[in-house]
Amino acid sequence: MVHNSTKPHKMLAIQFKYLGDAVFITPALLALKAQYPEAELHVLVAKEVAPLFEHLSWITKVWAFPRSRGKAKISESWPFIKALRAERYDRSVDFGGNDRGAILSRLISAKVRVAALDAKPKFIKRIAYTNTVRVDSLPDAWVDRHLQVLERVWQTPSLPSVSITIEADPALAEKAQAILKEQTIICHLGTSQPKKEWPIIRWYEFYQLASADGYQLAFSVGTNDREQTLLAELKLLAPECVALPPLANLSEYLAVLKQAELVISGDTGPLHFASGLGVKVIGLFGTADSEKYAAPIYKAEELVHSEPCVCINELAHFSTCQYKSSCMASISAESVFKKMRQLLR
Image (cartoon, rainbow, N blue to C red; front, side):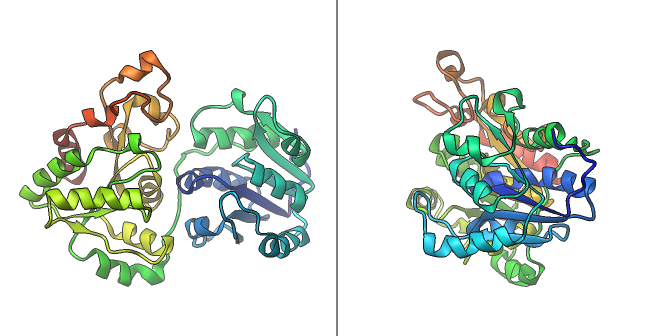
């Protein structure tokens, strides 16, 4: 344990995981800032993730690291690492716990380096950190896990309330309004894993119910081919439905989400972004088992669950259905429509 008698002057938080996971570190960052209000708090994330943190006034600096999955660009990375080393951090905490975070933690070389590790970590992880916490001793929920690491290592007090927090670029608000137009509800079709997605036929049924009742919907997807295909399938069923145009970057997407009255999505980045922005959300989850990783962020009135899944008995559901037919299909359009009306009433 690192005692609190030595107050840090400069702290670094590191997170290299999926885009949607990044927002789950903000409660831990707030806890650190509350504990050490005079200390500088820096954040190191992948370049594409940086807009999530750039407009948080209580973060001193966001380091947008250039990365390509599976590739090390030494010519770009080394000057960046040298600049980070020059900061001479008192403490660093790696919330991702993967190889990239471990290597960067070791190279940046803060005086105290913290992470949560598996029971048998790789060699690079064993030498990367000065203080570690066993993952199997921590809660499943990401927010609770990150807070527990800080509490155990640095005795960081618990916050009175836990919520994820991000900010959109206010300079993009007018442009975002023009993009969203009169549509007030954003429906995000895709996720990182197909079996976490609500089937397109259900989205179509929901669109029919909502449109008939006068609601204005806009559909969004990611930039990859698979998610673009989802939108194309919906367009075949409802050619008149409105889709968000391609956006330049994450900053623009966050600004558009901020203008929405409600965001409906599966368990993926846009759902968590909208929640962090303070927008009303409805999360579509495949059984309560998959919700545990996103707890305690979402309230019961913000979630719609599938029916109990066959794969819970046969295999292990984890966060994604393992059965040949996704349990997400059991979520009816009527149940989501009813939840929407309740939230917007």
